Amino acid sequence: MERNVINTDLTNKVAVVTGAGGVLCSVFSKVLARAGAKVALLDLNVEAAQKVSDEINAEGGISKAYCCNVLDKDICYQVADRVLADLGPCDILLNGAGGNNPRATTDKEYFEMGDIDGDTKSFFDLDKSGIEFVFNLNFLGALIPTQAFARQMVGREGCNILNISSMNAYTPLTKIPAYSGAKAAISNFTQWLAVHFSRVGIRVNAIAPGFFVGKQNYALLFNQDGTPTKRTEKILAATPMGRFGNSEKELCGTVLFLLNNDAASFITGVTIPIDGGFSAYSGV
Image (cartoon, rainbow, N blue to C red; front, side, top):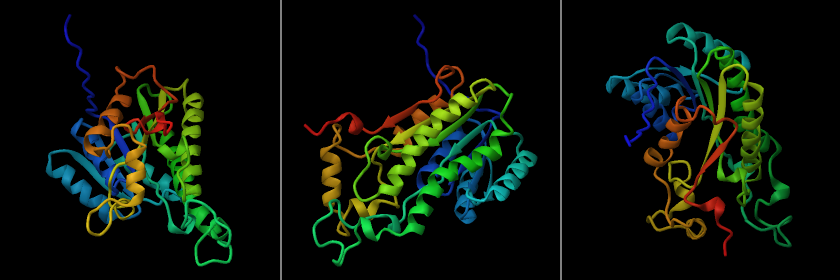
């Protein structure tokens, strides 16, 4: 029997990536470009997106950076029009913008008597505007760009929307209730969109990364001397594979698979965990 090799060819496809200047989404953007896509890199920090675009173009790829606030509908629609004029209609939308904020994070994992009046940020001290910021960035930050770019997809076969969920969507991590709730909303929204667009040529899926080391979480996972923090010890103890993931190898393969209209043509509405077994482990 001839061996079947999956090869995701995105030649002539236009891929739009939000949060493209970030650690993970910059990697995704480069992988999409290497697969042949013309990539629009959207980020509020356009300098970060431009740096990634320059690296893609230096490799022989085609990309362009755009300043975009994913929470501003008018701006998203304006950027969508610019991408259409510059690169063509959007075939792939990767909703990568997101993140957490200290104002929506408790200091402790467990509430203890005395914390209300103590020198610690407890659940009761969480900032309303911080919670709104985190929830809006992660949820509305996917919904609004989808409104802007899915208009270019409807009725065209082979289009894809890929959202970024998280392990928090399955079981919330301690300290970060707003981020956990927002990612659970993303997984639910992925299912809703998949049904809503199922008759007009658009597949909608998501990935749920486990623990990958990046600039955003390095200080949470490692001490200044490079030794693992207590939180890292707990994470690795709850990860059957006993290590952190490699974003370039172990996230990108799933991204390319889900965007492959031959290999994944009957897959829509799923969120795939990429977590070394974290979501499967009961702790016992």
